View 1 (cartoon, helix red, strand yellow):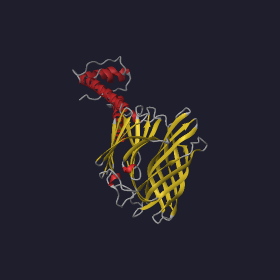
View 2: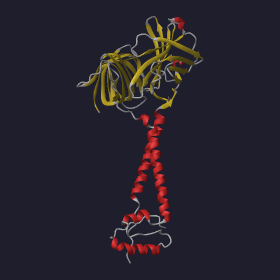
View 3: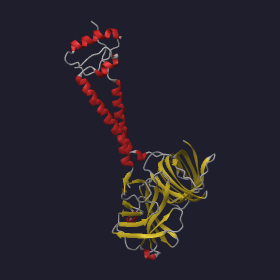
View 4: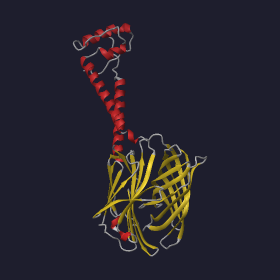
Length: 207
Length: 237
């Protein structure tokens, strides 16, 4: 009696299933990476460690120690709120200067650079009685435009209208803060904080 | 019991006998066997009701899996950056800074990595260069050589009528001591000259400065008023 040949697996089906499983695995990893690497939103935020002001190992002014930053976008309006460690006073002492700044890079659908801005708040005790003021300026522009600022305890807010924001698909942004104390023309103290510590936050805008 | 497909390798003349054998052995479970089919088609069509049904289910599951993978891939498409040119870069810059004894110290920086850029077109165009630092060294007179282990940079350039009108460069690099230990990040900003497509491809007149940086010594050493000048050389990656 003739014997049956050895049974075989249906190879095309198995190979197809393996390909599909691998594709799903790769897709899932890419999706998780995507969610990790970028935010898709009309707002964005970041947290920064407390006590990472430079120079290290010295007493520093908590008004520049960035704890939390929130960005909100609507049409052309850019709203930045920076929360710092300490209460921000109405005025600084004579010879003191503090700045809270954001660098904002707008990128369009085709990944071309739309515009890059600096948006900042500052308190300068030698100007305007040291009250909080805000400005924004496109990189390279000589003149800065003033904009609305708000102080609320240890939070500072600034509102700017940025051309190109409505067309932007992606924003790269970072925060830097500075505190300086001068004695005449001599710089006595300079302190800095950066957020994120290394590089830029990348936010994909939801339209 | 008959969960796997069966293939026969014998010629058709032997097939009828085997078909009969199968029909007897699996009586009631086999729908039909035809010798007019090729041997491999036997597998595909006429063996077993259960196998036949399961195959449809398996194909449906396979189709769903493929559709799901396509959907996931479409969802993550924004992370795919298209049409950017990619280069390897080397930034070499030298200058000086003042240590805590207010003494001028020469500083030599050399870093390398990759950079992506999308060149715009037209008389008024803007470029965003995105640098990824892989490695490098910083040598500070009197303090030794430190390793650069990472970082990133951005260069924003704007041209008006083919003349550079804006060039702003920002670099953040992570520096470690030669034998390990806590690292420090240097934040530097400055300007550059006009990109030259070469050869050699380069961005000349790079100027980077920082009011304060720290060396990763124990305790950290402050360097004030760091000013470096140099160039970025690009090569195809």
